[in-house]
Image (tube, rainbow, N blue to C red; front, top):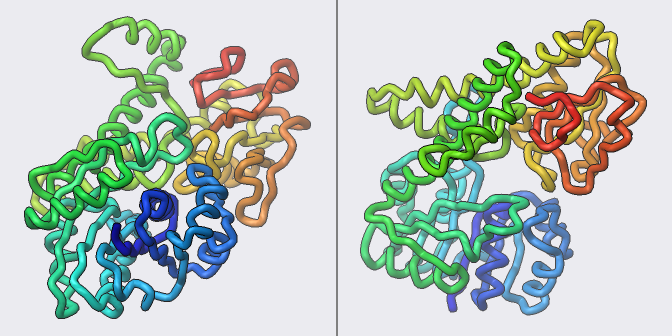
Length: 398
């Protein structure tokens, strides 16, 4: 077993850290946030894909050591970069967290190591950015292993989801394979790191484009007076050539709204058109405004005369993750036109200085995200309900 340093203790880095620590590796979980590390040191995780019991077990066995001290990474044989790769204010890829991780490695690593990048980015990030900038005077190997974590998924997890890996050298690939096979059921080797990096962008761009398509289909069906859900059910009877996607309020989370822009960025840098990708992004980002317009059309009086509650602030069922959540975009649209809006999400609990409100005592409810413990039966006869999830049969559907 190895001494492993994981830079970043968010939902990707923590999942990896606890899986590797449970397999017997000694894991240094590094994060710049003292608040995050303090919680983890007390076996307190706000990430529902990692139980506090698992964290506590690894802490007691001293196989997991959370810290804000980068010098603790000095003697690690494997360093994994698991940091965010968001978009900046101009909607361009922001690699500042990766660059920060590289600086931390350069300043603190004191031995030959395997450097693995799990952070999602465009092809060439490992070879041309990370490997080029790490120059500590030691001999390092480099590999890409793009994360495939799906928060809140009770079926597919880090153990049983196939893991793509590829190193810059055969030695790096072999070392990464041995490491991931110690806690992952199925390791798949890509021919080059660029293939692995590109595959991650394809996976989420595929979802972005198809979600945009079904969202646009729902708008067309609405104008034609056709039930979108019935159309999807009918199309789903075809046993080949069709994959079921459900319309929604847009897309949220760290992956689907972001990864396609990384793909578009590298395409444009190489003078290749990415117009379909950009159009899909535009369609999905416009869905919150489209939902507000639809409510104004069918809810009766002007929307600002109604009391509105947004149900489900997180971007996904059964998680507290609000990153890029379309629910927040809908809320902002409504408030901008003078509408009195509250929100209900007992998993999120608190956001932006506001707390989750009761569902009743409103005129209009917009169900953006439906957690499993949510009971909406009392709303059935009391208010106008627009369901953006396709799961509430008695409500108005997208």
